[in-house]
Length: 252
Image: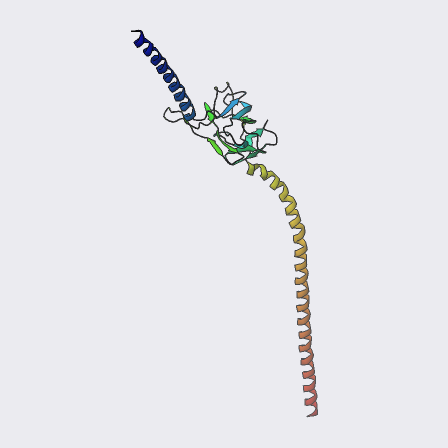
């Protein structure tokens, strides 16, 4: 009996060790197979519909092990124009550039593993329940992460776009006048420049007109003088012919 029990106990301990080792290996395998937890987020200091001069903070978590961020592009939701956005804080050397559907903020490449964080100020948030800011991250080695997917059918997307949930608008809150577009903003400058351009053209036009008038006047005077000379010659010839004829008649 003692021989059998002695042989069973080591076997049981070995089985438990194999079970623990298998669990550890399975956990490690699942951890390696799981998708990266990095993502992009957006927060607001006043997340309320129709709120004015709201500061938004964007955080893009680093997921590259070999390169750092060099640019972040944000697609603005409906109701926010690129001209409504001004840059607040950003990584050193980064600048904001407006695009047709949003903006980009970028500059010198950041250190590997460092999150990219920047803030912007919005002129006014639209009257909505939530706002999605599709975000595209670019690393210094050319790698691109697209956080642009929206939930569909109750399923969480693998690359979710940052979403900002808004509280209802304050009583009496109204939409401010829309900010001018880039074309409209440039229009006053063009209009302001037009008078001087017109003035320059008008200054030049009379000079050209005067020259043409002088030429026309010279041509008219020359033609008139030629006509007078021709008339005088005709009259002179006629008078000579008449005198000669009378002389011939007298002689006969």
